[in-house]
Every structure is written in structure tokens, then in C-alpha cells.
Image (cartoon, rainbow, N blue to C red; front, side, top):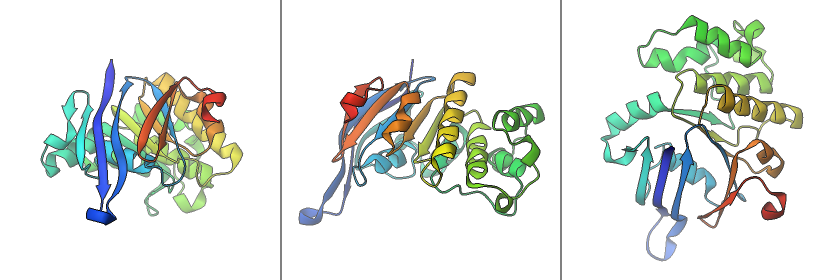
Length: 231
């Protein structure tokens, strides 16, 4: 079953002679529980695509459906609530609240939505992420890899329909990068979590079920990971 449908998405910055088409008629679907990776050069439009899918940016045209809901047909207020409850984000910069502990950062989205955290679920996520012994530490007391794991836990805690990961390993060394992608893969398999990940590192796409490439605002579906297709 397709959980995400993107139809004829376009994004144009500027107007007239200065117009730049960041996305050019992009259409694709992602199935429930699928781990898909998007690759592309810097400036290709892949981050713009992720921002539009996540309703962080308004497309110039086209549709984005999440579980058959047209997210841009909503009012801005309803869209904000829908995004908070149904889309998890993992960014290159961790965006943790420095005054909150690891556990508090993870449950923060639930508190924003006036929900009571399920302690068993929190404990499970901390265990899966290898952060149980760091649950009371502040972000400044963590390594970069531990901070990104905390960010992944924050994205997972609401059990969203979709997790969008924008260069989640960009600030990490090679070992921590592999660890983060392994954790995302675990989330996809263990929780049947749908994940769409942007990466410039082709080597990290081997864990993905499918690879998409964005070039000059256009998207090509490469299917399963294949180094020959990516070269």
C-alpha cells in the first residue's frame, strides 16, 4: 500500500528571467514500511523535494498525499498539526533542545501535542538506540553520533506515518554514519516505519529498499540499490 504519493510536484524560485525551477514535474510513490533513499548532487533539488513533502515549504504546483490526505489542501494551522502528528524529521543538524535531557528531547513532540508518553515505549526506543545509560545527559554531554541517535528517537516516538531524513549523517564520521543508517534500517524493519532519506553518500544507500535520484529538479527511480546505475 502506498503511504506517500507525490504528483507532478514543481517548485519555482523567482520569476521571469530570474526564475529557477528547483523541482520539475516530480512524481513517485513510497509504500508503507519502505526505506527509500534519494541521491543527487548539491543543488539538484533533493532537499527542496523533502521540504515540500514535509510541508516545510510550499510547492509551486502539484500534489502531496500522505495516507491519501492532500496535505496542501489543509489550512496552515491544520497542516501544522497534521505534520507534527504524522511526519518525523531527522536533519543534518541535530536541533536538540540544549536544556533538555536525552529522554526529554525524545518525548518533546508528545508534550507539544499534549500527549502523555508511554514509558515502556520510551524505554524501548532508548534501548534500541543504545541511549539507556545516557537518558539523563544533556546534548552538550553527548557525542555527535549520540546526538543524532537522540534526534532519531524524537522522530520515532510519535510512530509517524513517514520519517524524512535530510543528510542525517552529514555531520558524522564514517563509523557513526554507518551506525545511524543501521538504526534507520532497524526502525524500518522493527516498527514497519516508512523512511525517505536524502544522502550524498552513495555507499549509504545499500541499506535502502529503493534508490531515487534527483538531477536538475527531475527525479529518476533507480529501483533497488545498484552501483552501476548510480555511477
